[in-house]
Length: 50
Length: 464
Image 1 (tube, each protein chain N blue to C red):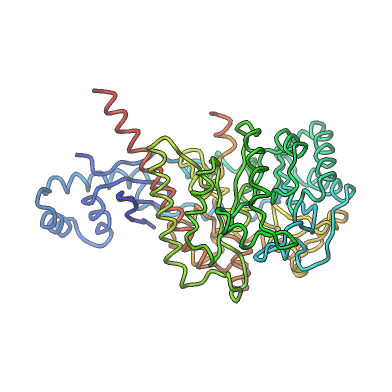
Image 2 (image 1 turned 90 degrees about the vertical axis):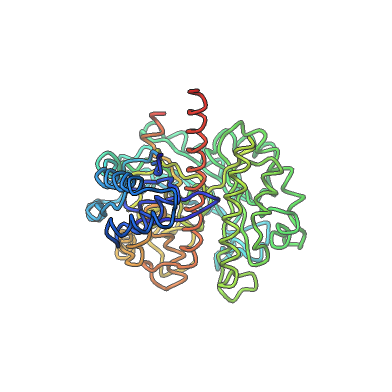
């Protein structure tokens, strides 16, 4: 019986070298303007791959 | 920095350093909770005693799974990203986003407005085309190799200066190709001046529109009133509906503010969902603590429970085929931001700046009006380098309080303006906001766990 199911998540260590292009949306330009929703933004590189 | 929690009937583990998420049962939860503090024999004895149907072999299987996840860096992982912060501080920043305050003037007089009814503690003012064009040129000049440039038409109410918005958009489109850039525009509006002309323009040129509505009529009209004191709900709702209907799937958000007067704000979110809007955002009011509508410690447990109720309702509606999006719950676990962005934060004062109608530069819209945060202007550039340096050093590792928080790579240390206004220190933390945001992250992750479990069940069912 499987007691731990791991969801697929982005490999943050790998993203340290492949990321950092800065092309993604600035979080405050989207919807809130009053708090910090960094994790809500999509990676522009991965979006292009879709 | 392993965080275990129970939400909506799910037991969930977030490994804060790697961002890994695990859906576990009660047995695995108890073992993971005990793992850093106790020996295997002791844990095995405790678990087999607590759960009559769990054998020592079962417990050892969980140990093996934990050790495999540790080896893969997905559980009890170390923080490996301080070096990312060091590199960021060496990098010359480029500017990629501007919040253009095209109007320090508003046709509503919302009592709770953080912008002081649009004037930001100053005089009423409209940005001229010349100043706006200079701001766009400033952005082009300082954006380095960034292709995507973002401009938010903000205020006050930007549509009171719609001609300039339209002219600036046309100017940007006329020069973007020769500079190898792509402008992405957004517009934040209270809706009063929306007409078919505005709708066609927004749906053609704006990659996102943010439409301000607080929810139920009585809630919206409590604060969002015209200068004559009339509630705005009946005036704006048909306009918002028409704009969204004609938007053809392009991004928009209905964006509300909740206060002490509607701590049951989930009813307002659901009101908007029931009106047929599917992209929703709702934020706590930003105000001085002595305002009658300010949120205080007394409201906090109520608000936290509201975020849970919202998570439960959204999970239920997704299963029923009636999903909607709530901005703070739209975490993308696979396609979300890289660690560089998670460490760097929102870019306030470095990548992102606000421009006043006169062309003055501020780190963001929430600092506008405070002269000690003036960075320079779009005509002469940044002349307060010391201030910019303070923002450059403000990454997630600048906040000692965040070191042991599971959510730090979801919020990057939080909003600088909130921290400054709450503590007087840019590198402080706004604890109230942290409490709310941790709860939002828990619910956002819960929704992903629920989706993943349904997907697994569908796969298993499909294989039969």
